[in-house]
Image (cartoon, rainbow, N blue to C red):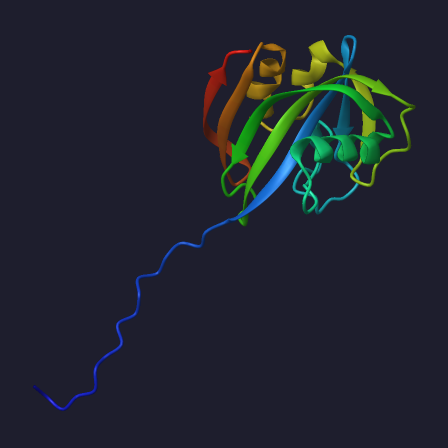
Length: 175
């Protein structure tokens, strides 16, 4: 045995674990049109230039339903009267920092009047049949049609550098 001091062995480098973010994504329908948010207000916005449903991050202690209702009211001035949870979307390491989990709702009845545009951009009623013609995230083109299916879905969309690289989905029957 030599008189050398014990060497410290460095632990192998582990990839950084992204933190989790919970959000809602809400598609408000009125007959054959859907309320969409054009994210055109802040060039530093990850979603800049894209069209999205309404929604946003959970506040501490909120349920998905509470977040959905609050976000729709804050962003549009409308009060949700009828909504259905349609699915859950997972976006691993979407922005290079966070895994995003979005609860997707379809709102079919609201009350109140459409308010001023939110800070993220401008609101517009778009014919539902024309949604896929908007500038959307690539994954949205997959799941927007699922809003009209009976039952719910759970999907994972993997993006790298802002591009969809793959996805997988499970469908669950209604009732």
